[in-house]
Amino acid sequence: MVKFNIPYKYFIIFFILLGVFNLLDVVTTYIVLNYGGIEGNPAARFLFDNVGMFWSIIVKILMTCFVIWCLSYSRNKNEYVALSLLAFVVGITAATVYSNFLIVINLTIFPP
Image 1 (spheres, rainbow, N blue to C red):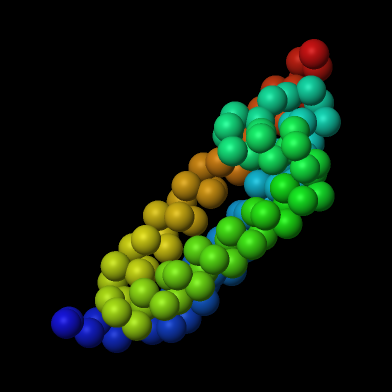
Image 2 (image 1 turned 45 degrees about the vertical axis):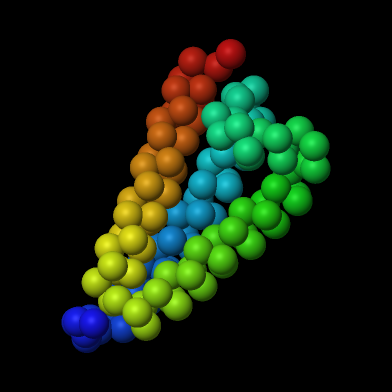
């Protein structure tokens, strides 16, 4: 096994970014839903419809913690793969937040 010795600060930065983007995702999704938007993720829509917003947020927090735990554990196996996966997850979450912001702006300018 190849050991890369990537500084731990990079992992911390990405974990913080993941937490911030997940929080922004929850906030922007909530705003879009309040404007009458529809959740595009079928699993999240199922949760919103059946257990409500509060428990959906709890499930999202638990899933985020699970992803962080898995990536922390995988860091011990292969740092490069763990950091790459973490960067990918942060990028996907950031793209979701960006999309939500565009929808909020569009709904603000052109209300339904």
